[in-house]
Length: 183
Image (cartoon, rainbow, N blue to C red; front, side, top):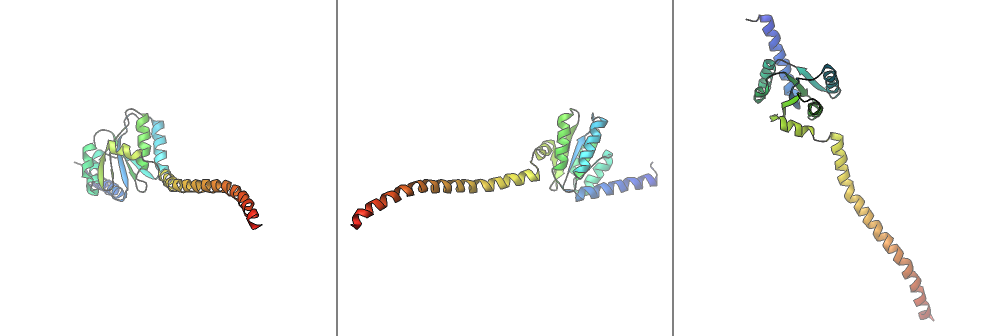
């Protein structure tokens, strides 16, 4: 039977992780089996740069923390070598980074995740990872707003150019007709 000190540490670990999960916008569970030390170091650096907390916890601690945070459904995915990435700000950052490594390393796989107070499966996490970045979405939005305006401007310019060509021809004919009538 574990000592009171060990139990207190585990309870503290569960409480800390549960608080992270409660305050997070999204999270992803992965099977990190087969990743090399070099790739793992690069992965962790990318996660830190993106503001994502990526750590390996015991499955029992992760399960209790998820249940405490309201994501009890995630316990079914907690088998084998599991790492947990929790993002407090960007809901797609963890999914994008982990999908890149899952595509590169055959045994590294995405298990599940959570977003918008709901648990999602691996397919939904991969779909989330395929969403363009915030900057990319803003560019697309601005492009879609600018496109009709450019078309209108080109259309108006074409009308001006076309009418500009006809006006000199009409101006040359009008004085010639008026001159004989004035006599």
